[in-house]
Length: 339
Ligand SMILES: Nc1ncnc2c1ncn2[C@@H]1O[C@H](COP(=O)(O)OP(=O)(O)O)[C@@H](O)[C@H]1O
Ligand SMILES: [Mg+2]
Image (cartoon, rainbow, N blue to C red; front, side, top):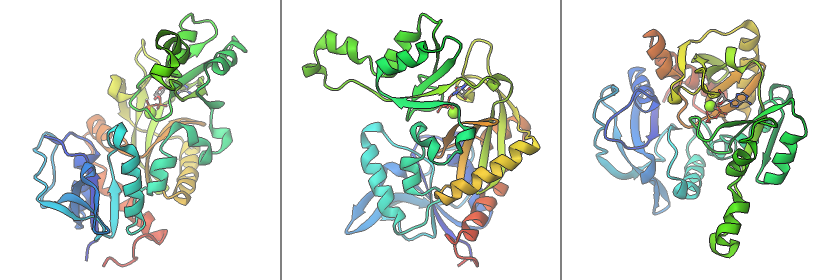
């Protein structure tokens, strides 16, 4: 008998070639009873976590219509496993995490709710990545501190990025020589001084914002990779190529990508990292790697299967979901023999 699996995605008009179409299709192809639910319909009805959902009865294709979620406010608890593949609107984030945490008390998740909340952020990388694999890192909302840090060594460059951003948003390289440096650090920390002077703090309220600052990784342009870890297995991913005029190698901002290759050292490191991540309840994650450094971790909807397919024509999704389920079984989160 197959597992009963709920995949939480965001409702859309059409499917894109991303995990929302690829992962439920792969689980279905592997013989599981798969339901997809809309993350933005989570609620609690008479102590039961519910969502709008439908049972998958054919594989989804990119460009295909998103199906009607025929079962309204149906139990999200009556499953062997939940796979969260979507975030929500920033203003609904607190409720989203609270409801996911509640659901996760009853059903195992591919990535635990606590990990989605605490570890899918650029501030907390040090909790899971060994110190020697992280560039020098700071998290701060203090413009003066960061400006002084960058000024203190004219030979060092830094990358500043929102602690909870994604897809290359507001990722800036800063160094002492660049006359944009102060303005970029001010923007990264909320432009608090300018806003207080312009509007008054009484009117504008607390304006400071957190940013993560990492030392610029020297070999990044020749060595950046996205690797998808399913448990401790690097199952897919892609090589990244920065555009000449961009510091960011996100495929979403137009960087070229090719088939992933890993060196033996990278492979060993990733398997070790996968084990650490599983100890934190993380079984499917996109690692941004410029070995020996980890740039960041991505848990919600990490690109990998899709770009590998676009680069090579190959579909690794069955292999990926098998590796995830096998790791979850080994960890005792899923029963050994399928129900
Ligand atoms: N410390 C760093 N050194 C060099 N380049 C970096 C660094 N941090 C980020 N970048 C570049 O910026 C891109 C986006 O940063 P990342 O931390 O992955 O945030 P996002 O969540 O926006 O993808 C990376 O893929 C990489 O090309
Ligand atoms: Mg990234």
